[in-house]
Image 1 (cartoon, rainbow, N blue to C red):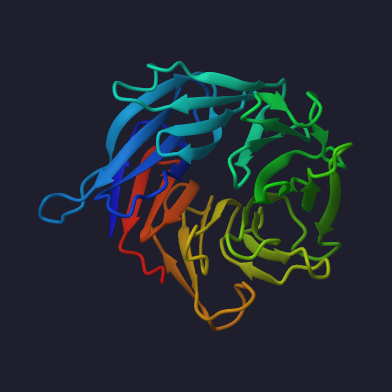
Image 2 (cartoon, rainbow, N blue to C red; image 1 turned 60 degrees about the horizontal axis):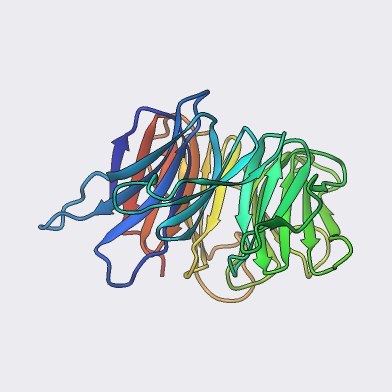
Length: 331
């Protein structure tokens, strides 16, 4: 079941807060992506007393001039966001709004930031820049893990996405089509290995990446030709599966955090899809064990971001609206 809320600005990113098992409502954050006068907002979505769906309720907003490029929820009341002015900002939601504890800028660089990822233990984040650098920062110590100038992507291509799969290891994807694996456990300098397609129609800009929650080293990647590539870094350099998912750029891709046979994708083609794989074993989108469901009906303008948990998905769109979809079969 779908319910939407017009917000008046292009929504660039949405992220669900951790779901409490006893909660009757869902909290999620959104960030807008206009040329100026942007916002990071916290929303609550709940059912009415008779079970009917209600529009998401705006709880609070934080104004920021630059477009919000990515957002990570650390806990229900704490989030980090990155913007195209090169900042990563920590927000804490409290009764009365975000301003009671002033937002803290934890990173400020000269290049636009495209993506943000936080390690599974919450200690470290990596911010990926359009200029080809990755900035690794220790949240607890408040200091950079890498050089203040960042780690350079080997071919200096713009980095579009990043995802941790272990506390000291993460993947990044670039505009030249490379999936890069980084290991921060080396004290001298991070080591890196690369996976890439060497030829054919599937070589394209990689736009986004999500790490499988239960199979470390398995990643789902969305590209600019609408394909989903599933990589397993423990195996040879070619993807486990390549699936034509959309008719245009895939802007976001997210594994379900607990029922990880479920994957969510959204695209410039105006579609948001739920991929549900039955069976066990290595994750792949190939074969007859995958069911695909369209979440938003008839395609409209591009859908920029998607997230899912429990039986819920949320989307942020170029239509200046939020969409909340409930009742998903994720088991």
